[in-house]
Length: 154
Image (cartoon, rainbow, N blue to C red):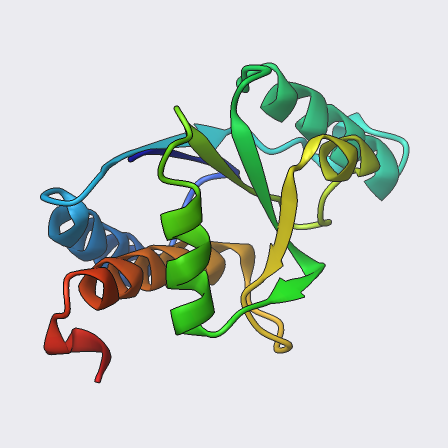
C-alpha cells in the first residue's frame, strides 16, 4: 500500500518530529509513506482566514492525481474505532495511492472537502494540526499491527 500525507505547514515541535520518525520507521516494513509539507499561507498575505484556506487548498490539490483516493482529516468527518479504521484501510488495499490531507491552522477549504473521497475525524476532541500528524501515524501503525495479529493493539 502506498500512502501520501499532505500536510499544511512544518512540524516545529521537536518531540512531535521524534514521534513521527519513530512511527515512520516502524511502518517501513508494512507500507511506503511519503510526507509532503506544503508551506502554510500567512494571514498577512491574505484578506481573511477563508482566503488562507483557499490558497493552501490550491497548493494541496496540485499534488494529487485524479485516480488518488483522498482521505481528508476533518473535525466534521466520520469517527472510527481502531478496528473499524483497520477494516476501512483493508478495503482500500486495491487502490494505487491513498492520500491523507491534513489542513492548516484555520482548517480546510471547501474545495478539498468536495474533492475528498472520504472525510475522517480522529476524535471528538480537538488536537493541534501538528499532533494530528503523529496520531495519524500511530493509528496507521496500530492498524498494521491488528492486521498482522501483533499484540501492540491489545
